[in-house]
Image (cartoon, rainbow, N blue to C red; front, side):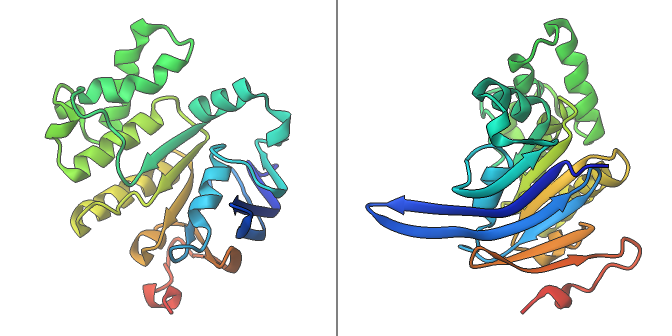
Length: 241
């Protein structure tokens, strides 16, 4: 089975005022459908830049990125927008929910960019909210939710189009430890029970060890690439300096 994500010698150089700053330096790896990969690294290691490229939010300056068998150059701008909406789901640290809008309407938002009949939207959103245990909050504004509930609503929104890959960017960064653990258990269930491919960006070991594999970045390069045994998770201190 071909990799859903395939990265070869990926490079990204930012140029500001004639000053070049390398962010990614020849990164290569693959992700198969159903994998759960965590990408770790300190601030400035390149993990956010990598996420932006994987999520079609930015383009590399060198190397090749294939998603679902096609390079970025194989997709038109309209196709890129369609892939991002239908095949990719995004969960961010800041939740990115509309504050004065109901939870149900927040979750339905990605459907406005599809050709799915509007009469089906409520049922689809309800199903997504039920899957994250938030069906009792559908009529509340998102601003009335706790941090953990906001992130679960954001995950439901990411699930609405049944994407192939869910990109989670520091999903526990704004949560207390208990809420963060709940969110990570939910993301792990999406992978293990529903088969979603997960790419998690994090600097926290306790979140990364929910994954089946951890890539650690340092100065734009892969420092280590470790597979975790799902039944006997590697201890957290193995991944700490």
